[in-house]
Amino acid sequence: MLEKGKTLEGHSAGARGNKLAAYAAMGVSSCHEPTSAEAVLERLRLGFYVMAREGSIRRDLKEISRILDHNISLRRLILTTDGISPSDLLKLGFLEYPVQKAIDCGFDPVTAIQMATLHVAEHFGLDHVIGGIAPGKIADMVIITDPAIIRAEYVLSNGRVISQGGTLQISARHHSYSPKSLDTVWLPKNLTADDFKIRADHTRDAMVKVRVIDMVTDLVTREVIQDVPVSDGEIICLKDGGPTRISAIDRTRGSGKMFTGLIQNSGLHSGALACSAAWDTSCIIVIGADDGDMALAVNRIHDLKGGVVVCEHNEITCELALPVFGIISDLPVDQIARQLKEIRIAAQKLGIDFPDPVLTLITLTGAAIPYLRICEEGLVNLKDGKTLDLF
Image (cartoon, rainbow, N blue to C red):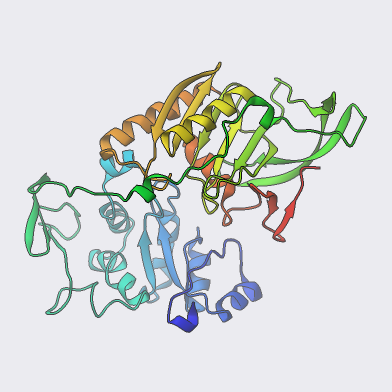
């Protein structure tokens, strides 16, 4: 990437000292993981661009704003949402939210605006085209009455007023998608409950030691070794708050390859939750207390050509279609927000009490969040990068 003149973006969560210096020496140009002013300061001193997160997944700006006490240049500090949910988009807006939050935390209004515009353009080498208002540059503009209050009275794009007083002045664009982009969920067969059984034919013992994904927070996991019961050569998941099944299933190559492991402390005690928008792997990820519900949820995703599905007692209780590449909905944002709320409520009834059950599920395949993850190849320990078996 560096040879082609591209920027190398980084995730250096927890790194400091020599490890962080080595990371910088490899040519990594940025990091959006710092959660404290001290971590931001260390990265700025090493030449990183630091992206302060303030969105639906992380809200770090208040703590990071203590960087103002150090009286240093903020030219390499950038604002990012790092992902914003449809409901927050409707309620809080998009980048105006972190810009306003920065101002409220003590940043100079002009500096806060630059952190979302000019600094970003400079980092990606695009400041000759965007990031400022000048002849020859591409500049969408907002007109505000008070620099300390980010509330647009007018929004101009391509030389036209597209919004005035919060009211859209033009029709939303219609998007057309190619047939290929709407057909990306391929399974060689309908799955059954038997496909999610975990065989332990190698042992005649009543208990067997296995690796379990342990939910530490709604995003962070760890590896634990645990004894689980075996009956007739099959691992049994007890209905007493112990581990439940989790599967990652290839959906892009039609190979039918899948891996089923165990996860605990998710809260799930009934039914199943599945989604085709798994991070990094683009597989279908499903967690379930009932094998039949897991199969029903995955098969429904195949029928929808992508989606989020909640099942319980062999019935589909809630769903959202994601037909574009299996990860994007083509519905208006208000409808997406409403359906995701219904899915969150349905998942909570199954026992999943995390703030965003779908986000928790789809990040279990992500390579940037510690430590034990899952893909269709098996379990992956991000500390050493090794792919591990269940046993």
